[in-house]
Image (cartoon, rainbow, N blue to C red; front, side, top):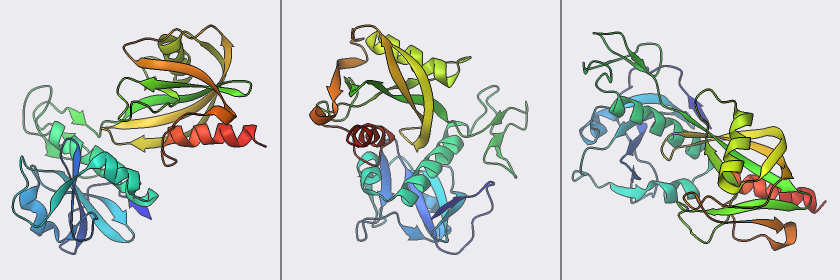
Length: 269
């Protein structure tokens, strides 16, 4: 079980899970194939701007940081983060997401974005504050809607231009714009990408997604009107699929994969 910490308590000298990230990778212990457990002082040389406590995983403290430019001789290795995340259990995924958000905070706001002064760690929150101008920075979390659009016994699926597996189809998704409700985001994104109008937008569930800092917020919606006309900048192909003719879809651990499987289960009842 992963329990996040509400504040950046000082690292203990007892052993901790050490979550070190680079742009696309995670440091692991090749002997175990897992995130290493070390005393924080043993891993500080590997972290660009220090290590930051952020919770406990199965009762063991967790620390995170951003890897220095190259991995020093340490017996550790770098594993592609998406692949590791794909095979991890749920508690570890939550720890990875939390650690990635907080590590990025301390790396990306080490200096004040307003005046350039070195920022300081907040005592009671995961955040940084500028001692010169008072600017406060917190972990960046980017809300993105993801929607299962259905038309009777059909579901709207698309292949995206940025999918790791180009042959895979998934539900539509997109980031929420400033000043926009989540429900408005659903309707806008579906229309922009496929020219389909939707109605009856309903919240389902959410999932943190650390690639790099999204919170995926799932909805269902019903078809209202329109014919598919894709935005080629975002979509390679979009189609209506019947439950017994589904293409290759995302893994079960992803919110998109869960929503498509929920559609299939409801249609098969």
